[in-house]
Image 1 (cartoon, rainbow, N blue to C red):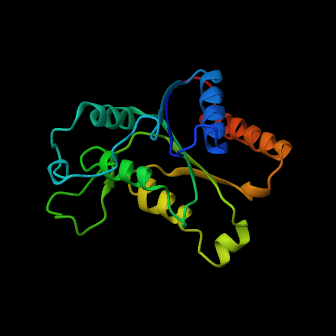
Image 2 (cartoon, rainbow, N blue to C red):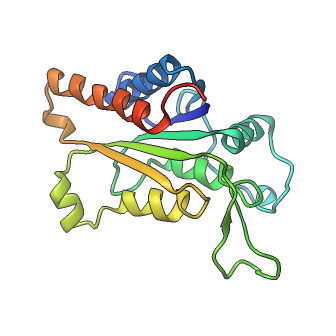
Length: 199
């Protein structure tokens, strides 16, 4: 399987980076081909310009590479912190520019964009890992767990990926080293369970 792993955190020594590293290692150990992107280290430009909006628009080479990898991915893993109930701006821009019409979704003939799109991504499953300093119950009861809605319903569900798993690691700011090590073990387990061995 081809697994696309996307990291969005500005600190290369962050726990998010450790999660992404564990995901890369686990996917590789299971025999998968890994495409890894650290959006901050690559200085990914998150700004969608008007010339890129139309379906089939010519794209810069680096952006086209991202699009090609996502289109061919059998599995997708996203790693980012919970910032104000949202992904970091660089990752939101990645979604805007990469999860494109004609690549990730399309509208039916005669639908000008007012209906429900048909998903086009071939990935069998997606995993999202988040870090947070908010307790899970408060995230659900007070904020409605917006990241679950964004990734499961608004992005992957609409793009044809029905197997979705999200894991929140919290509370990060008070976590001990042993606890973080146990969290990384969950990453390895998740990838083995959801993506399995080489296929």
